[in-house]
Image 1 (cartoon, helix red, strand yellow):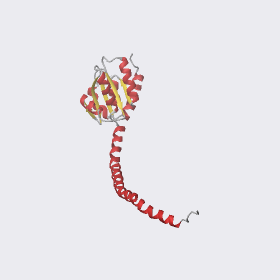
Image 2 (tube, helix red, strand yellow; image 1 turned 90 degrees about the horizontal axis):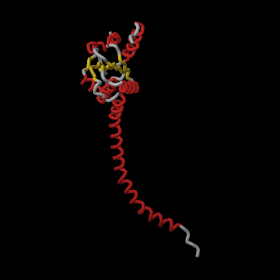
Image 3 (cartoon, one colour; image 1 turned 120 degrees about the horizontal axis):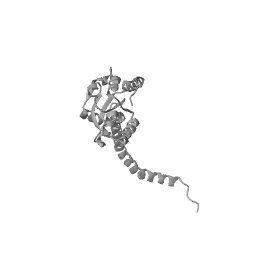
Image 4 (cartoon, helix red, strand yellow; image 1 turned 120 degrees about the vertical axis):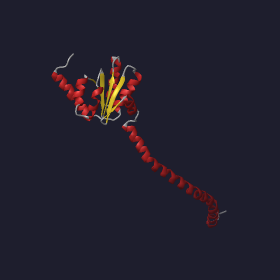
Length: 192
């Protein structure tokens, strides 16, 4: 069913709003992919914050006009599904993971940071850990010198406390015997 002019304007406005916030766009040809598989792809995309939509190429070209994604207009040919994400790697991950299990779903191009990416570059982008994982790795790197320093201090303290503790244990019998004798002498003799 064909869209009216107002319907087309609404679609372009909706996509342009998503494009304005996006860092990454990935294009994939979906010809031959079943509706059930595309529904699963949409569910996965929604869960990961990826905007995914099948668009007429002319509408997509109008939506990306004047943005950093405009460089991919020459790749907007054929039946394509467009994915946009605010996270730099989310769109590439979702589309790449889906393409691994669906041979008829083919990644054609992508755009990141104003540069057109081929299929291999999109796959490389998809293999970059997510922002949360990278932040966790950075935090681990920042904490490792501190925790290493704390372990060294604990080892030094244990090493220094070791001989002192052994010496105090050795002194206990030497001190305890004279104290016991002194207490015994000072105590009154038991009445017989």
